[in-house]
Image (cartoon, rainbow, N blue to C red):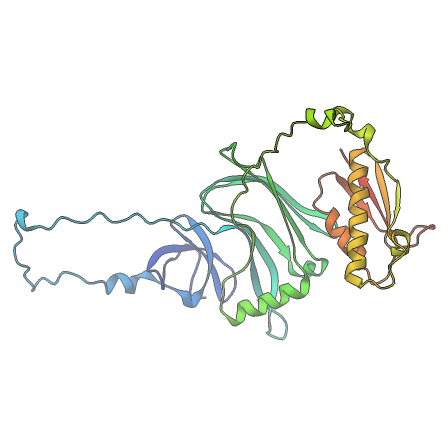
Length: 341
């Protein structure tokens, strides 16, 4: 192995000096430059000694002309280096190893949170497999910093990992929202393609942007209600809103023939949109009425409706859990949602 942990190195494309902090595989190392850690291929770095040796030096035989103080030109102030903002990212770094046939395979994925903005954030990060939490952490990340989260066994990628992160500003700003949730679900096939692309293009990692800028707070417009009341409209107190809502349901059947009579001429996309709209309506009403549970009948079919419903439920804070198990009434064609308030 050419490098060892602690070796001083230089980044070839920028001539910045740093050190090796981790050996990732026989092609990549983790380096630290000016306090920032990031992966690099070994052909992108070198030992700094040759660079230092070949720097232009003052040759003793060359005598420079004397320069008097009055003739020294004033140096122009150099502009400070401004870091360019580029959002907040989830970064996956594959760790490779060799199998029994001497083929290169991915062993684990190192997961990093990378902040390329001028703001610092507190965050709650959760990583799930099949709706089961695999890893959770609460911490904070500073401006233009990266944060190592954890490792994932590569074989678990087939369980479609879900990454959910709830951000809040370290320095609170009334012009910004109190918190901001992001969700990233990675499909196995797409990740395999990204890894091959990473190897072909000699890239150090696989990146997914969570957001560009932390969102602004948009105040709700205050609406004057007295003109409406004068014109005969009913005005309800906010505390009594639940009393005036449509009653909720404990079981919702999303079969299209239950929702509309004119469904035979509809495309699959149109049918799915109608079903999801109906589901979201009864989901919202269940929360408004603080129901303990809701059963959604989606059928078996090709599974697209069930998959979209499950994706909708995963990041919702009000959802304690949900399960699609055999039921004597619906078989495997229904999902039970349990709420936690």
